[in-house]
Amino acid sequence: MKRKQTLKIVVLVVLVGQLSLVWVQRQAVADWMKLLGYQAPSPVAALATEDTMTPEATKLFYVNHPEIVRGTLFSSNCPAGGEKTVVLGCYKGNDRGIYLYDVTDERLNGVEQVTAAHEMLHAAYRRLSSSERKEVDGWLMAYYQNELTDQRIKDIIESYKKSEPDDVVNEMHSIFATEIATLPSNLETYYKRYFENRAKVIAYTSQYQAEFTTRQDQITTYDSQLKSLKSQIDANEATLKQQRSTLDKLSQQMQSAKARGDTAAYNSMVPGYNAKVNAFNVLLEATKSQIAQYNDLVEKRNAVAVEEQQLVKALSSDTDTVTTQ
Image (cartoon, rainbow, N blue to C red; front, side, top):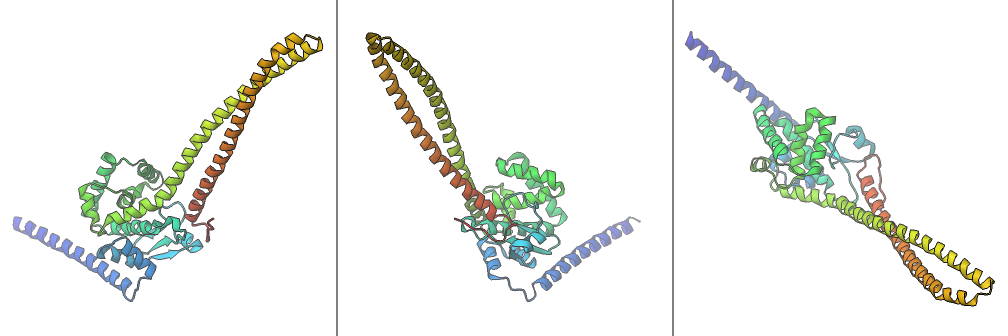
């Protein structure tokens, strides 16, 4: 009886192994059929090269016949709101395609490379076996819960928790690899499966994000300067108002003395009056200068804000063309 049970267990293990082998073979055949006669367009091939994708990653990328598109062709395949991070693309589940938004603004070089890597990793995550996924998920969650310090990434993950709670770890799998420079050794080793040099992808991320952060920092600096100047101008204007009131009263007193023929009283008030007029004019000129400086800063600040809006527009799949100044 015991021998029969052992035999059944052995047979079951063999059957499970055979089923797994059949699945792998089916996947290999499906990949072969999808790649049969496929020649990656040069822009797509360039992305794989620039991202230093390994042969395995390149195969996953090409199996999905990536397309770099714009306008309605993009929006019809990639509904708005899918990705929360600064990537413009989507992976259609079950290897039904990868779509990348055609970003033409040269200031945003790097977006397509990062997006390509991000979406390829979604395809890679789908291919993980249950045991592999369990292990990788554990690494990702451990890093997220214990070591992640980047608030921007934390905010992105939180947004996924609300909008796509079932895909949070899947998104971590793509985001951590493409947007975080240093990861724990287990994840670094794991991602070598897909990238010869992951640092190249991170460099692309830093490159295009800097276009936004630099301008945001400039705007923050301008806003701080404007706030300080506005405070000074307001204080000066309040002082000028008081000084003007004092001068008006002195002028009335002087005119009254003059009217009643009290020349001595009139003359005694002249030096003080003139000193106050001089102080008033000095402060007035300083305030005018500050106002001019304020207006100049407003123009510079708004110019940077317009540039930032142009960059945002360049990343908007709702427009077919983007004009830059």
